[in-house]
Amino acid sequence: MRVPAYFLCAAMALIGAAPCRAAPLQVIDAMPAFWRFWGAAADKPEAVRVRMFRDTVVAAHPELFDTGVLGPGAIAGPGAHADPDAIVGRYLSDVTPFIPRMQRISETVRSHIGAYAADFSRQFPLFAPAAPVYFTVSMFSFDGATRTVGNGTALLFGIDGIARSHPPDENLKVLFDHELFHLYHSQIRPELTDDAAPLWTSMWEEGLATYVSGQMNPGSTEGQVLLQQDLPGLARPRLGALARALLARFDSLDRDDYEDFFYLQNRRPDLPPRSGYYVGYRVARMLGAGRTLEQLARLQGAALKAAVRAALEQLAAQP
Image 1: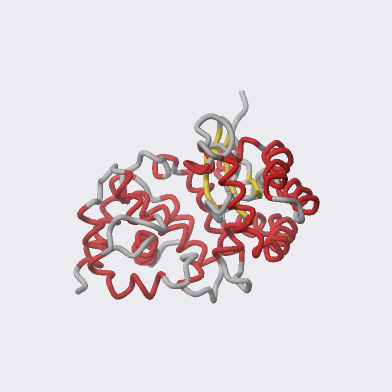
Image 2 (image 1 turned 90 degrees about the vertical axis):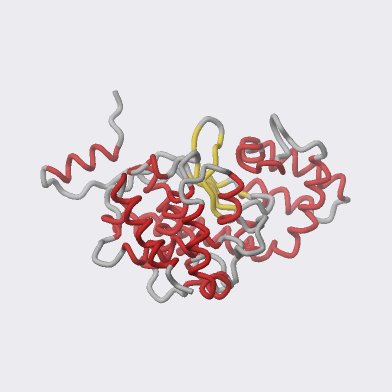
């Protein structure tokens, strides 16, 4: 039987052995196929470019273009969009202005991912990720995200999404620490990162990842750690109302509620998009007083739920 690295590291810690060095991240860089395509297809007619994209980029990693990764915009596999060629054509037009920045980002993350992971492991020595990490084009679906790839979970970084959503001078380590923490949290507290978990756990998970990335990158602004520069200005004046809205849906399992608080587009004009991240960050900051990042990551069960509710109630008392 293969024993997970996490349990081996934990056992070594209990007996006072030297710090455990977990296996390195399994990184799968799907960007070389995209760059081969782009170099060959940039001046071709749209129909030819679309075909070349499918034959070169999608064919190299079809699992990255199905519904488990791209959702309704999938262009490969079961459930693919009814007109995938039209989606690809629009995408290739829309992505063109971002190509120079994508090239720089692609080179940066390839050369820095080892250092990012090493720094994260120094903060969380028991980090033993089982999920692979992909660098890919996301058709602008995400910058960083956990998705089902094939039969398992993977962490994906959309180079195009990063180029479009993040300013050129941004410290990308903030984004990587946020997403690597999700891997670690899933490793040690999988019940909190389950897609079927209630709304309050999503708020805690995202808020804590935001808080952790801020603590690991001193000097970062709230807008930087929230991965949305304007979110603090939109959410801070409404903090009391946002906390009350989350309390009202605290145990909700409704996917629409999740989208209202965590998506860039939602149904409710009274909720700034992604406001759940901001409120969760404020809750994590409150619970972080007197606790290390490791202690915060290990909070669980009824005690965690009560602490999150109490913090929300304090925030909800604001006008």
